[in-house]
Length: 140
Figure 1: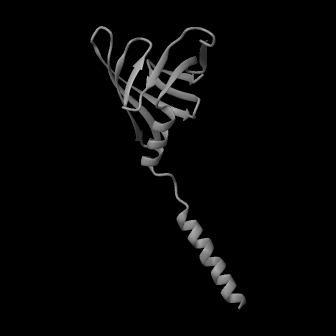
Figure 2: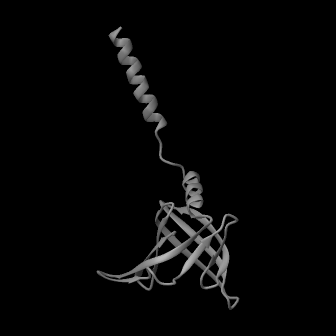
Figure 3: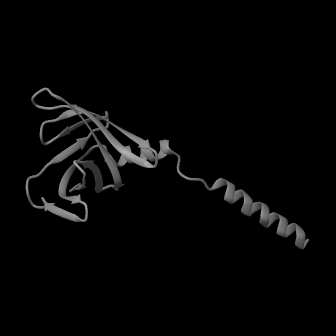
């Protein structure tokens, strides 16, 4: 009887260990889209890091840059840039890919790496000219 209980316990533990798995990329992408969509994301502040030094700019309480990610996968920002976006996972990094047109009818493509996303906060970063630029957005 004791051996049967041990066997059942061992099989139960094996079942739970086998059923625990990492979240698949499609689920992560879908959840990220749900958190981003239908909101106006306001830029609160940015941090530009060059080597070991960094510069923080705050925009809290000011009319500032914003971006909308709409449910139809279109996007529009306060600079008048309109386009489409796609959430992708490259390696282990979730990214927002945007293909858009400026007010002057110029094509622009940019990619934000997602550091974290929640229902009311978003942190993204990208690298340009040997600088890491991190942007902190919120929904009010």
